[in-house]
Image (tube, rainbow over all chains, first blue to last red):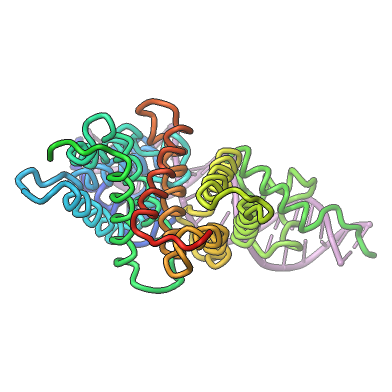
Length: 193
Length: 193
DNA sequence: ACCTGAACACCGTTCAAGT
DNA sequence: ACCTGAACACCGTTCAAGT
């Protein structure tokens, strides 16, 4: 006799993400996920291979959300530097809203739990695209990497409490990106845009 | 009848660090540490409060090693920009030699396992010190934060595999720091040094 | 076809009992 | 004093048995 499904892979993934964001990675147990979707832990294995696959799926979902968040506004007529600043601002807002999710993307995880590295690398593509208008195509990738590394480092250290030494962290963030952009301009011959 | 000690807090800490560096944080179990020092797991509780305290001690020890690694060479007569580049280079070398240890410093850990945030923040002090010669005292802290955030972000993404898209990563690192320093120079009025 | 309790391996931790 | 086996709570995972 067929027994009706009481949950689904999507519901399990959503529950896992909610638990992660609320209580962190250590709280993301199979039993907690099962309780949240209303089954017992063994039933989860009908939908997901194991906990590692579930953690990976969560990381991949966060990656995709972040990618969408950073998509450039191609209808904007703001100058390229301002568009980079806008992307950087959306990035920091995302990370502050999803601190546990973002931390998962760079957590020291065994390979079977780590999110797809290619997809994660592709998240920075909008920055390369906009940067090409500041540096030309040749220098765009390197300049984008510098901006992305700085932004990632800044928010990671902010989350870790490394910037408590004073002042307005948001203002420091905007000052930082202006410094980076100034360095990029000083070292590149801008093209038309 | 007193029983002789078969291990010590120092030996336990060293064993924990070795296991972390060899096999990562998930391999750092009380049983693995106990086996390495030649006792059973319950005996560890005579020397360390619990696993959380041991993980924190490992992180604090890594922090202290990193702090020593980044100390500026105060006898050097290299110009300030070259000294910043030298510190950045020692930083990347340290992280590549101790990837699991460095990852631990920014891992999403419960508060009782996280390394001391104040000590971690103090690791960047040499950068502030040298930067003051480029920017003056007022701008040194902000400029140092920008360099530190960028360097941290760069190596973190390098470890996560985010820079596979090609080329010489070491050269990209040096190019990045030159860009940052150019931006700092462009936005600051240098003092004498 | 899916769900469940029971079972197993593993880990952190406590504690009474050994020396 | 320190060490140990046994025990407990917890977690991931498998599987035979239910519907």
